[in-house]
Image (tube, rainbow, N blue to C red; front, side, top):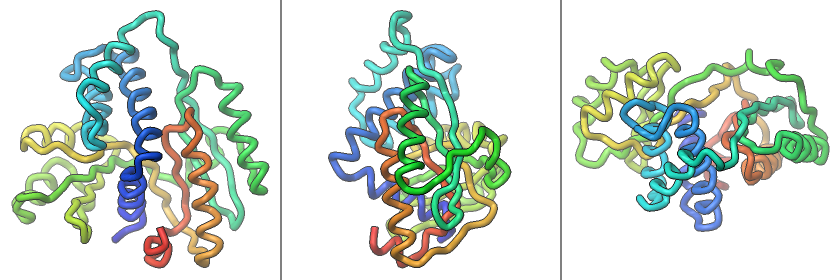
Length: 247
């Protein structure tokens, strides 16, 4: 299994814990709210909202929660969020790319800088690490009763660059950023609801660490993820089978 597919698997497992689930719900609600403020409350005409709702359903968010988040986005008096990214290095030369949505950028950058400083990292300038990553569409789809060969042929036509089926029965599909919407549309036509559909930053090359070093990096990644303003965290550390087993 490729590194980014392993990362998707880790995220899914981490999302299963109740403590993590409340954090995930909070981030999904924020994304739905931002999507509505950005392009309106109709999922048919708002691809970003469709993606956010699909991700919420994939995490078993109750329908009422989704509807409340949409209503909150329509409220003109509700807080507005600013999207910002932060880039830097942790120990062993591991690059970190952080996507945030915040109503207080001063608070967000202060929190992120504090984590970098605590673990001897360096917060860089915007754009300084973007060359290390490609923006790709990543879909996680339960196999269920799907015929693997027929399904793969269908989604290759929709721009699938890579398709992997993991041991737990989930397809991990990679597309170019440009084909992300096309794949969303194809899955809708097939009546398939992905467990997750998101744009990820995939590293061109990865760095392999020993287990102890990798676990330390993952603890820092989790600290970033636990911040309420942080939506996504990407890195270029290799997710080894040994690390997967420990997580």
